[in-house]
Amino acid sequence: MMVVTAIAAVRMKNLFAAVMLTGLYSLLTALWFIILDAVDVSFTEAAVGAGFSTVLMLGTLSLTCSKEKQLNHPPLLPLFVVLITGALLVYGTLDMPAFADPEAPIHTHVAPHYIEKSREEIDV
Image (cartoon, rainbow, N blue to C red; front, side, top):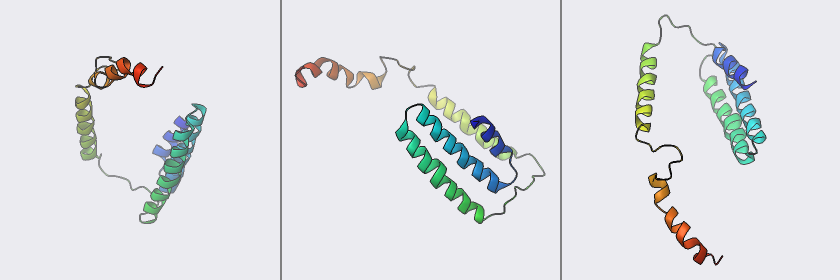
């Protein structure tokens, strides 16, 4: 149902209906988080995604027209900007350590202290 809602929101020409579908998508996401037992994340998604974001988009829509304008040419500049941004983000991840690597700097900083000293510090 989430996939159908997402595709419908992208394909919709009426901007008001597209905003409502994005709000519905956020509510479906919140329900999915409840199924995954992440109630805190679900509450945040419902409040921010379905609530606040929808209100902001409706406010923006009130300042514009309600129908999407047809373009006479393909939007090459936005496509170029998105491709360059995506390539830079992928390039930025190349230097990251492997997933769950025990020798990653994040795991070697304080983990040895807790492994060695926790027994005496918490009197177990």
